[in-house]
Length: 259
Image (cartoon, rainbow, N blue to C red; front, side):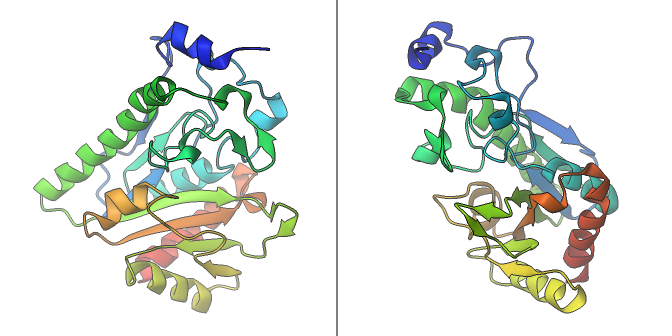
C-alpha cells in the first residue's frame, strides 16, 4: 500500500517545475463589468501524487472536477467580453472553493469514493497544496479585483460550476441553480429573471447554498468586497458535451445582463 503522506513529505513540492501553474486566464483585458471565475475547471493531478489511488474513471467523474463548467465559462467570457480566471487542478488535490482550514479542502471521501492520497494528511501536506495551488489562484483573483477597484471599474462577480443529476441515489430536477448568501439583490433578481423568461427548471439555492464553510470565492471575493455576486450551478448531464456549452452560456448571459 502506498504511504501517500510519507511520499508527500519526501517530495516536499507538490508541483514539479515543468508542470503548469494552477491559474489559467482568458481575456484578461476584457471590457465587461463582469468578472468570471471557474474554480473547478480542470481535473489535472500533480505528478507527485500519481493517480491519488483512484481509477481513471474516478479521476474523470464529477468528484474530480465540474464537468462541462470550463466550456460554459469560456463561452460566457466570449459573450460578455469578460475576464475569466480558471483553476486547472482537480478539487481532490485541494478544493479551490473551500477555505484551507476546513476538512473538505482535501477530502478523504467524495460522495461514496475514498480518496487514498488524502487519508491522514499532515498539516504540512495540506499547507503545501494550499501554498502551490490554492493561494496562487486566489491571490491572482484578488490582485485583478484590486486593480479594477483602483481603476474605478464596476465589477459584478460570476462563478460557474456544475452538479450531478443524481446524488446519493436521489434525482435532482433543477437544470440551473442560482446560489447566493449575503447578497440578496443581484442573485435573487437573476433567479426571478430566469424563472420568468425561460422554460428551464431553475433552483434558488439548489442543489446547494453558499456558505462561509462550503464556499470561498463568493464570500471572499464577492461579499467581503460588497460587490454584486452570484454562483451558477448547471446540471452536468446538460453540458457534458461541449457542443451544448454555448446554449447554456447564453442563458447565463441573458440573465446577468437582463437584471
